[in-house]
Length: 397
Ligand code: C5P
Image (cartoon, rainbow, N blue to C red; front, side):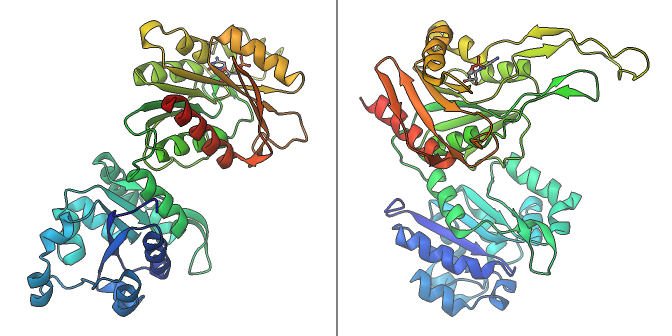
């Protein structure tokens, strides 16, 4: 009952994804949450108030001018009597109204009147999602603190493909759990690095590596889910920003270092990024193909993990590094533990054929002063959850 006694106000707006909101209601109630729902007029064309009312176990609100609604529960109380307001699906129209402060029906009025955190799950045709207007509205809302989950990419209702599918009910539930978390790391601050870095060769070329950022992003999501206030410093990746996590996107190792230092103080640091060991003395103009190939002059990059591990009185209480090796995994990890000065090393075998780089699975070994813990083959998400649990256990001890 991860959402026991939590009150969710669910605003359902008029999109075909509204049918998934029925399942969302069930999932929330299974976890102990109480759900009140507001339907826009358009939403009632896609799902019936009766279905929503039956599943939520509460009467459904949709008309701002309803005398009975107002006498039972005024729209202001409706807006504030919740721990979280979730808009799912959130149409382009509703995002525009929210951004513009328009309040012309019960749903938009409640969203303007609420002082509770808001999570939106956008769902629309990909052209609408990618339109500058929607992009600007969403950016404005996020800058004001509205949280977003999705949209996912895939097949859309009209037979087209692209970003615009509403996040799945269980993904929305996980985001809600993160935002309402009373988990074991509540009150603690965490920093996670993720992804590769790009080191410029000239204004158009760069050196990079195959890191996808999947493991680092999953760790940030798991720490936030466990209640930690989490900052994710990420190199260029295609991974979406985890909900409830403050994300700083950077390119180079030096930018990553700066963003990490700016995030201090934290109690937990997990360095999962594949930081380029070297950078290039970059040319200020595009190198030409004429003549002999240019010689790249490499300089060593700052070591973020080592710097954090030796940050004096700003040192996080727990610093976790990664060791991606193709041979002598454990011996290499032990060496790294000492040379970096961190507390734990998560060692993983990235030999070709393991599919770890870019894949969804991972086999890791946790190396610390006490010894080695071998974990079975797990998904990167499971590795992240187990790591967050181990971190919570460390702080509880
Ligand atoms: O030195 P190596 O790259 O093998 O060490 C890997 C660990 O060190 C990872 O945790 C990685 O995030 C971190 N690292 C770092 N800054 C660097 C190089 C590696 O934080 N410049």
